[in-house]
Length: 124
Image (tube, rainbow, N blue to C red; front, side, top):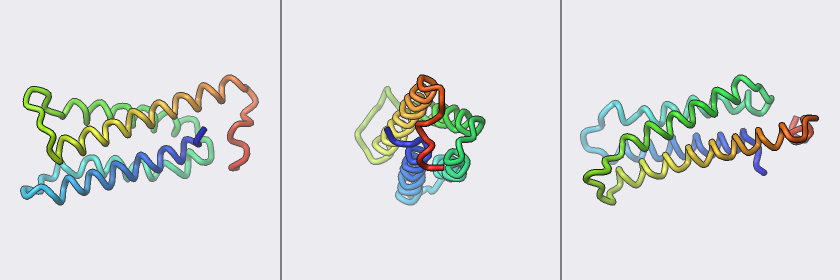
């Protein structure tokens, strides 16, 4: 199983790259299009603390990732859905967030089942 800080790094990079592609390909360049890359930078800033196994940061990153995924998927227009660049980037970032949350919860469950915290001792 991948470590949570690796999953967080991959998810943050997907959010940053997809958000910046969405911003720079839009002719209007709305400032709200920079929200997703900003969240990606916030998640990337938490990677160091995830590597040090800070439980508060781990729970905060999980909640922020889940909330971001929900907000991204709620912003898709389901009534007039067309496979264009904007919708594909929204689905990609939402799927990335939900996949990261699944990995976070799975690693938390696996660590709880061992109860001796030996799962992530190799990277300390």
